[in-house]
Length: 379
Image (cartoon, rainbow, N blue to C red):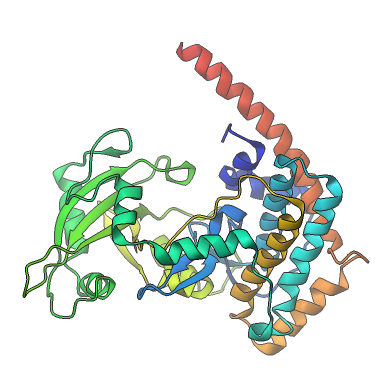
């Protein structure tokens, strides 16, 4: 998180919602009760494959998903775009333009729906091309740095105890888990899957202090006895920081909440997820596919920044709109356009982004100072 202000924005979700209360002062529009991502920054959008390997560009992280106000996803996305623009030394005028086209891309989905055609930015085209060419060997080398049927222990992977291994094994004896793994590797006749290896997975900010496992499974070919490996990601499902609407029928169990949110917002990913429990804790299982890629946006160019903002707006708008009736979508579109300035950006969105950007910049510098102090103390 100390690498850049943009990295700090991505890793400070709980702070974001604390500050949002201060910045918005209750002036946000009350959007329809739908599933929202809850952590909709640009690093959480990218190429995602469905269970059969068909690739689409969708939201790809749902730890914070809730039934809540869609305005929260818009603010989170707009803030991350503004932060990326600042980190790329783009002028403030570009941020004004980016938020304008972000809203255009988003709002159009509530008017034209699937008929909307949005230009695909070059960086997205390239990531989709790479995603479609990737194989299971690419996935193994990328995630576990090996294609052998075991997970190499070290800095990234830590050993687990027998109690954890047994709990993980029990998840993959369930019929729905066996069906998922068989479908993933195009197997019809395997009645069981074999746990080849499992390890605690040391990941990024969202995994600190929670259970996280990498799991290697084998689906035996009954004719050739050929080993077909699958890589599964198991993560503890914790309570969301994103504000939720009350009395909406949202699942109480966190893993079920995350999976239901994914199925509504990113169907390709949602169909590859299962809920489970490990040693009394709610976890969700995600079957990894080689086509899944994180979109890396290191530095924005002016033309690219505008096309990305419009495209990201359309992707999030599509995820929101598919959950609404035509009447609800029309009403939400009216709310968005009614509060817009002549530049097309709602006044509440602009005000929130400006205030949140200032708050994040100050908090980021404080974070860097604490980080340096800690390093000096260690030495």
